[in-house]
Image (cartoon, rainbow, N blue to C red; front, side, top):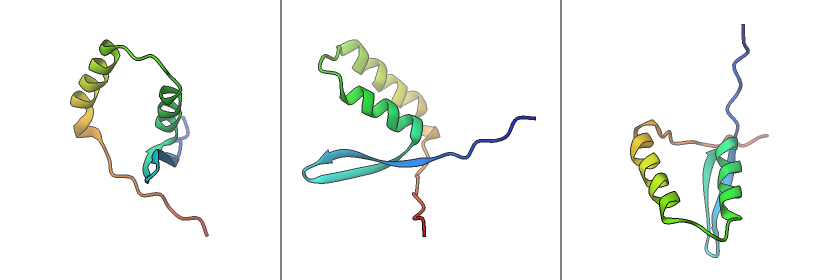
Length: 69
C-alpha cells in the first residue's frame, strides 16, 4: 500500500513592494516561480490559464501555514 504524502505549504511572494504573499502548495510554488522567469507570454497561454482557473475554482482550498515552534 502506498504511503500518503503530507501536503507541504510554502509562502509565495506575489509582490515585494508592497510586500504581498500567499500560501500555496510546494508544487504550485515551483510552477509560479518558473512562470515568473518567462519574459515572453502568448495570449493563448493566458487564455488557457483563465480556463484552468474557471474549471478549478471550486477545488481551491484556503491554506494556513503552521508556524514551527
